[in-house]
Image (cartoon, rainbow, N blue to C red; front, top):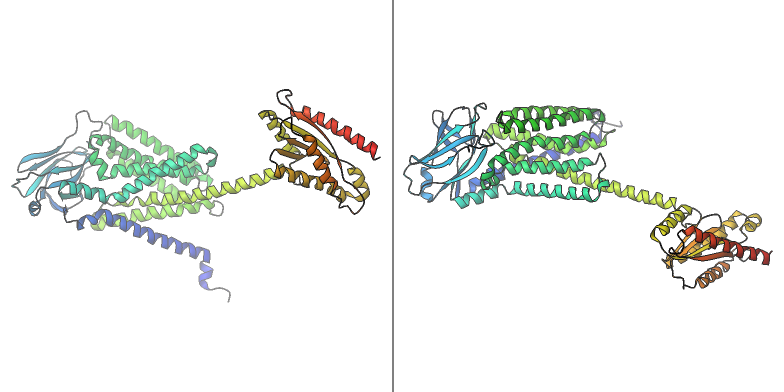
Length: 558
């Protein structure tokens, strides 16, 4: 029996893929839980800053925080602080959005958030705030009056509230967001590095591999979004809250554009037109929402359902495209597995946290997605680097073959032509030699072409050895027994000595089995670019001198 029922149902490759999927899912889930714990649970262990977990909404009773309540009219809620009075001088930190807010202690106004008259938006955006409590406070509670400005939403959120010393609160808030802040810095630096590489080497990214750049753009936009979601910048940059508010929604909507662009080149080409259409919808929506919000027609928050609907359409498109793409034809599809798992984990576990514990952790845990995409980007970047390196080596090999003589290993006629162009262009001076082997036809006819080739390779080995030892010498085989030599020396250089030494070395190679002395004829002239414009003019003169020497040789040894 060759195989079991299991093997018939699931081959080893598929089984290994499922195991890898499960392992990856578990690892990312652990990271998710750690992020959530670090951001939401660590505060409870602090002995100087305390979380107020329950408030009373007038007319609705007590609620656990954070909590969204269904209201479209002004409402009040009470923050109990009796058990924290013994701590001394206290401050309260919380987060208000889309509302005017009045805070009272002992029936006195101690803090106010009011929409400016010249506000860009009708919602008053949102703001992190820390307000100090009166030192001699008699009351055991704080009263907060909230006037929601976006009536169409029909709900208002009471965010997490903490109490303690102001400096301790700020330190704890910063500490609780340290992981997110580090990730934001990494994403920004990542974008700068990829952009720098692209600017320095534009040929590195072809059309398909611009997906690497799109990933870095996605990371940058995501980092901006997470920055606007962090408590710290919204507190310290409270004067720019409207700008931060606009930046949040713009970055949220814009993030899908590079993400879709990236996925587009990983799936079947038949879906390209649909991805282009979806990208156009996101861009159009971004522009229209900016116009509507600026003219107070609709608010970003009021139009959020449109973004959610487009996100749903995009996810459906991605799901269908991935399912309908054959990985054998489009192997890059497998790179989508990691971000899909990250999105799945982030969405599902965030929903569980919200239903069971009432915590909004999606914005915190969502950092998983850009983390995964950076991993993919590094992987793709590495593969692209290897591909380019292999292609470069292959091109160099092909180029080397194209300019190398197959028999001798010397530079060939094509290399000679390129070299002559370079000499003309750079106006280099030097000695030009034309060399031709004597009696090659006689050797080919009487001893065979193998011996004729030996005559050629023997001279070639001498010239290659000279070229290797003296970098001023450039030798080329430009024909059957014709050689071109360029020596970058001054006119005073003793060219006769060089030619004589070459002849002596060549004469000494008498490994033919018969009494035969190999020799060559040579002609040479000095090339001065100031006096003569073209190299080949001087070469022709050297060539004529070579033929005169060959004629004398034939006459002498006829």
